[in-house]
Amino acid sequence: MLGLHYDEKYYPQPDKYDPERFRDQKEYKENNFSYMPFGVGPRACIGERFGTLSTKLGLVHILSQFKVEKSADTPISMEFEAKSLTLASKGGLPMKFKYIPNNENGLLASK
Image (cartoon, rainbow, N blue to C red; front, top):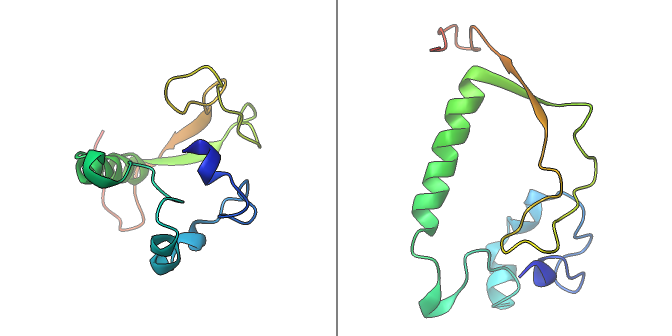
C-alpha cells in the first residue's frame, strides 16, 4: 500500500503534506484501489471506525491540555523503517509538549 500511496500516477507530489487532495472523494472512488489505508472489500478492517474515533478522542484530550511543537530533533523529512512489519519511522517522531494551564475558552485544563 505504501507504494500506491507514494505513486505519482495517483498522487501528484506524494511527499508533500496536502490533506486537501482527499477533499473530492469521487476522484479516489473512481481509481478503486489507489487509496486503501484499511484495505478494501470483504477483508477490510472492521475496526476502522473504532480506530478513527479513538484516535480523534486521544488527540482532543492531548491538544486540549498541551501545545505540541517540533523539537530540535524532529526530522523535516520522514524516513520509514524498511524492515518493519507495519509502517514505522526511523527514530520515531520527537516533539515538545508544553502544558497549557488555561485553554482559549477560559476553562481550566484538568491535570
